Length: 284
Image (cartoon, rainbow, N blue to C red):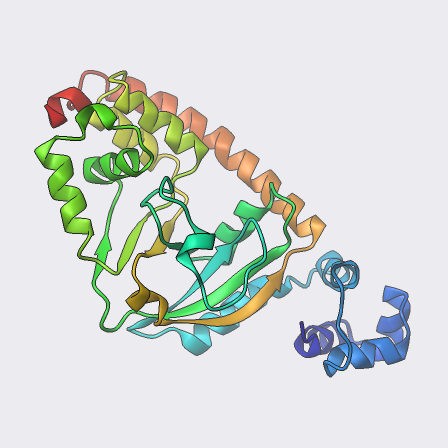
């Protein structure tokens, strides 16, 4: 990674020169200079030093970059997206190594609409990089789900939970329709949502209870690139390093969201009890 911008931002915001910064980071001035101009690679230990120092001083580099990148690249047809990965990867993107059939919408390349979504994802795994991309949607067939029964059924199908209903005309029609799209845009589903959807699939709650419970755990939208045509329309912009202190922040935030969502889910189950249909009524 080239740290030209990081070092410039830190120096200007804190009004310190590179010599002072080198002392703060316990490295030589020559090392800072090499990092700044990309003459020397920087390992994860030193990336942690730089980003932690910035974070401790109230400089949230990744949020700054998110804002700047969106201002520069986003327009009516182009969107900036983020990918938190379990393992490092290189371009070009390969479906076979970056996805699996039992993901939310099967094989595809999954991205979130905010840096926070990617950071939340890697906060619980041993990775520190969120990858930033620019996607040009022009010429791509895009389908957008909302939190509704169709979305819940699609998630359950691709997750392999609807084997008993595999011959349902509704499911066949839905899967056939989705096969025509290059990009699927849908609410992000996490473990809390999977548990709720599992209750719906198990005929424990109705679609109305499930929908309102899921809406209470809103995590934003994900973009799923499903075709090679879509992959050709994506460009890599930046690796965004997330230091341990920033990961801890997002982990705490994730815990808070979980606790708040759990309370809303309980209320939704009570308020919408006996309203809506059970899955066996929908897919029979």
